[in-house]
Image 1 (cartoon, rainbow, N blue to C red):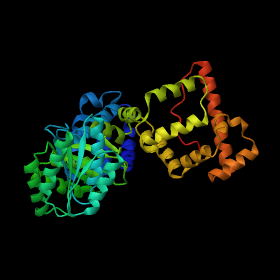
Image 2 (cartoon, helix red, strand yellow; image 1 turned 120 degrees about the vertical axis):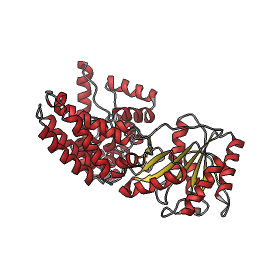
Image 3 (cartoon, one colour; image 1 turned 90 degrees about the horizontal axis):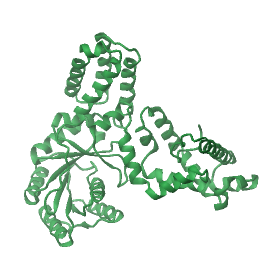
Image 4 (spheres, rainbow, N blue to C red; image 1 turned 90 degrees about the vertical axis):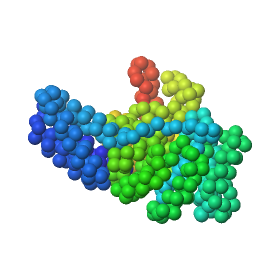
Length: 445
């Protein structure tokens, strides 16, 4: 989402860090470019005005301008102010009550139902036992979707016959949670195509009956500035305690994500970064600010790795690398593990300074290189995966035909894997550092 904005800001701030001492005029020129970049990203103009004013006020101070690392200090100031914009409000996620009740509200199409399943999975990681409640009696498809999602993540779903009042569905869900020992209830409430009083009255009625500990407004980040008045309307009507921003991995310019908390005072608590039920992240404003400015987000990368990789398996793989016994079978396993962490471009963007490489790697995935690599390995016999040295011309032709790829692609993969094994032999023999995470596309370089 923030690719264009990130590129612009990195370019502007990079020009400052590359010149040592800077003048107030340098800061003014840079802030004009930053202002344009933020406005083009659809950030609220009041937020942009205040942001630029605060950065300029801090950046033209004597301790900055006369410092030999003034450019780096300006980048630090921009990071801190960007974090302040993103981090407005209290982002504490509270699960109080027996059971704790969470209401998801929002317009139709914002992603409430999918977010309900994602949030349920997130709550399971916290050691709790959630129950999903299909509290949208107007759209049978929404009920069916929630039931399907609940089944896929092994979390029960409470529903009621069509026409049942929403308040009764909510009451029934809480009673079911108490009966089955579930300690968190997630209400997937009905939406509308636009904000209207009937919707607000219905949500207020449910809120009064169930007394939720959290009322989370689900907002589609792709809608841009239109998200701000929607958030203000829900905030004023039902006391929204937090936001879930969906489709943050999309192609929108990012203005809603940067503006909505600063304008409404409602904190972003979670962000949706993909379609899968595990693609929900706790929102950390400092980490997102770091990603936007190209500083990376190592903490989130580590957390994703801890979730995706089995500790014993990781130790076993490290031992194979040390002993230089890493095979194509292991390579395939690592590719599967890496997939669980999310898109490769997104992962590499969390590594400081890897913005360009992230785009290149994602482009390789989009071209299908990772799938072709996987298909080639799967077309091999177990013996061939363990020892690619036995791959003669006829075997390679068979693998190419079986994987739907070309002989040249098979040869390239085998050659590159051989080069990787040589490198590992050299490093293991010389005590050097181990190569990076295996599993990235081995296609074009």
